[in-house]
Image (cartoon, rainbow, N blue to C red; front, side, top):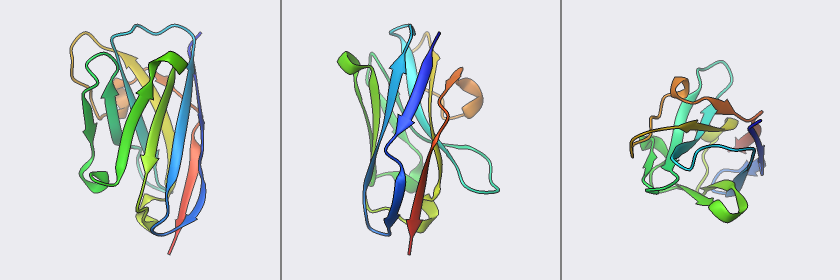
Length: 126
């Protein structure tokens, strides 16, 4: 049984930084995409960043490019999201997700992901 458990959320002031972690347990194919998604209050869930675990291709939504970095530690089966220069509009519940893929590209659509964590709250105050 695959489980994803996020940690590292919290409350910070604008301009601050947080590092989210996602611990993965259970078997998932090595050819998989891992992603971070977020859902602000009253809004739809959106893709933030993704990484292909074998090709290590990364992709980011425009609003976080240059501020957020997605990375992975395969030995520890852990996914990370380093978030710098945080803004109030980054406030959301952040989710880690995973899905098996056959190609080398990753989708930014939540519907493309099969496994999800419970989420960790990030609150950025101005």
